[in-house]
Image (cartoon, rainbow, N blue to C red; front, top):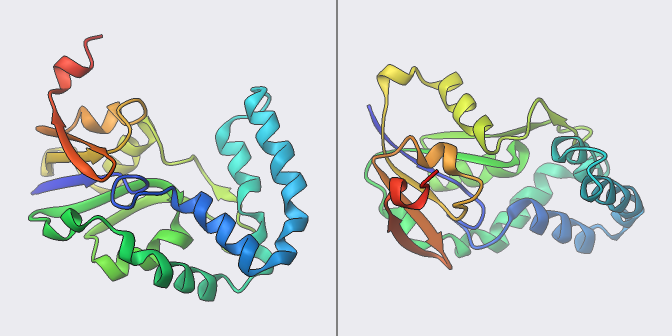
Length: 195
């Protein structure tokens, strides 16, 4: 089966959905401000390399424990769905979206846009804590092959905004397309990654 792989944040949409959702909830549910000090300390610990980003993501979405999550997610996508890049609607092959963003946030937009397969970071919907590894870098490839037998798929196009972080998934595709300010910029994998 031929598939195309898409990153989500800053690729299909022009923003980081997890961060934007955090801000959206802070404005819509102001009482979630009580979690900001904990999140700020966590971010500082990441910057000081005391904890890794996956450990930090255990704190990022802690506020979901005190909001009506399903209602908030629907309202968020009602506001931001129109920002999906138009080129995404013209897909021709089986679409696999692989993202580090939380499952509770992307499942709604996946249904609306008709992703064939969504692979993303798993989170506990009651506590917001990440379950397992953050779905980024090599973890994206591992999770892809958890869902599909490598011998049964051929990756044709890979779309991502991040040349730096998405080398592992770009390596799988026949064609690599970097998304720059919403525009598709094809590149040659071997020329771009000369190491």
